[in-house]
Length: 429
Image (cartoon, rainbow, N blue to C red):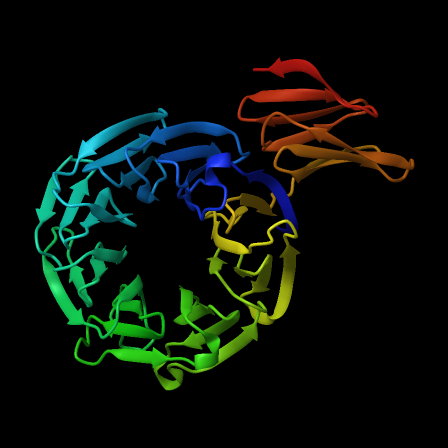
């Protein structure tokens, strides 16, 4: 169930003031949010905004990423050859010596296995297997700094570098494809381009933004015929893009434009949808496949579209306090929470999906209205709704004449229902 935007919490630390933040939700479950600012720290918060732990680094965080199951957070920092690994299951941090002599510049976990790729400022590569602890150093993968990359679902690794080339490697680090590009690459992604019905299975297309102006599509099965798509100058620079659906690409541009194109061979590069979503600037876009929604942010507002009908604006949220504008945004994998950061160093988390949970007793009903809130209502008797703050995110709710119970697993909490609800302090095991 998609709910109207409800702000769950805002994080605003003094040390973040005036800076843009780097952050990522824990993969799969979305219970943790890792955030780094300009203070040599990575802070880990739970989904209610409570700090769980922090990693002290010798320099600013360069990159961070969660493994596919959300068990391990990996971090690389300036002035360090170590990879910092935080285990979410035991809340412990360990350090792994990368063995790299030059500064690490890029880090990314595989989508399908326990492999971690780390690139450096001189173009070297390390592939680390978390399960076996095996490290594969690959010297000279590129001749300059590795700046971006992506794993495919078949465990191929595409990397982009300041040497203006793209390499495709297997999970052992062997180069299987390489191509030169005419501008600095950014935001490398794997996907499936709908060229024809005979397309081979798997993610065989590598896309990359070049010089913030064009989109370069490189088909591994047809490497001699790459496609480069240019856009109207009035759109500005490419800020971000996302593949979705059956071979469609959504692109956000710096001047506030939000464009969808198709990669179907008969309509390649055609604009299927275009909107001037933000007056002055657009800074990020995000897609939630589970919600079937797309979001863009810019200036000081967030706009939500339904992917089935992009012309319909589903929601608009304005953050009046963010006078310097918004920066990045990121959805949890299940689409329940959307994090949005600002140019002045704040991080806002919104609830965008809530399970339908409730119960009734006579004419009284109790239902979940936020992650940690149950509302009791009795419109037949003309009673005012009462919101009760609960201890846990419940998986079930029950209501009786005088009490509300919420629970998960084998525990339940009971609350006395009155004008000022008070927990009974009774827990059943």
